[in-house]
Length: 213
Image (cartoon, rainbow, N blue to C red; front, side):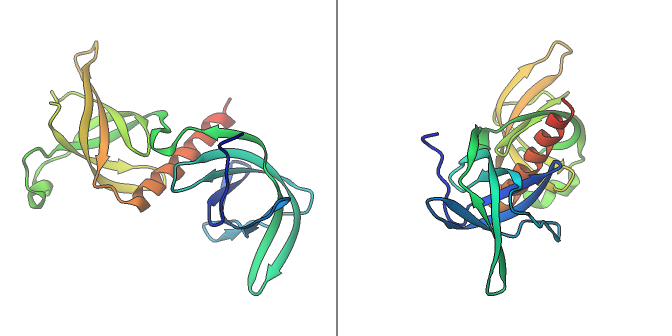
């Protein structure tokens, strides 16, 4: 794959039984890569020579791939345990992260904050809507309010491992057959760490969806 390129310090996920263990690429050679010991919520993953592992990689440049490698050996440099793995094979490109959209149906809370001072946001009650898809750049919701293109919303985002109030503007809005609104929203003022958390949730949702096929 011509556009596949890994770099030192790229973040990866090693997948074992649908569970993602995070690691960094710490060295790249012609015939192998070295990664630090993968970890998930304080649980370290010990790999074994000859083991085939599935990996997701993603970087700040929105390069996202799924591939496989074989564990060559384990080593230690100072206090750092590392694994030497083979050059990736069976490489598949995943959609760019900001456009990597996952369909799901979840209740969601929102409030319209158009022309309202931030100090007064708490005085506006949340309303209930339905989230029908999610990406790192925004989401699509179905609501009963008559939303205008220049409106701003505050979304109370509640995912399995991520919760936040996020401001959104309206990218598109259309009427539904049941006289509600289907609105495409874009996150604004979102910080990189929040974006990364949403991306992690998206990968986990996709893994779960694939495991049910």
